[in-house]
Length: 208
Image (cartoon, rainbow, N blue to C red):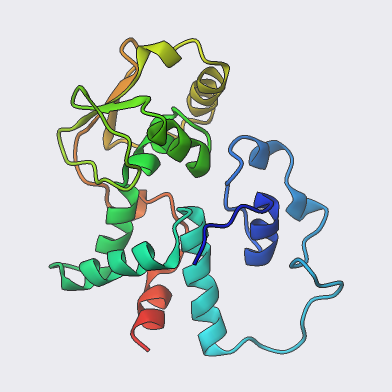
């Protein structure tokens, strides 16, 4: 399936919740406040959604939060099922440790799509080496740093100010403001995940 390139707000309306795909704009001006109905519907659907529909919607919400296509998303789930421990917690942890998501959590970008763009353009270094693949997994002890050339970039400045103002940096990241870098101190716990979803429903969707 091709990556979605349409209006980001349409996805939030479809999932009936804020996915924070547009960064700070989602905090100050959200279309859900004016148009709370799903796209293409003048009135909400009647009746109760099926068990399958509930699980599908939960899977779609998470997939859109992390902005992944179905193939890589399902592959992460299969790897989580084969890993020791709770499948749901492991799955969310692996998504949380993706480089593009870590860049977003540090505050180098306000949304997952802008974070992915920063990575793809070669502006991120991991342990001193340029990393341009958004899907690579950050390991404990790794240091993720922003290219010094982007220190005066307007978008980066706004993202850093937003992270400072909202206090969104998690405790498993040690941020160095002077060097514009962050060290992964430990793997994130389930309650520290930035994805507000029911992982059990997603597991049940893929187990059907």
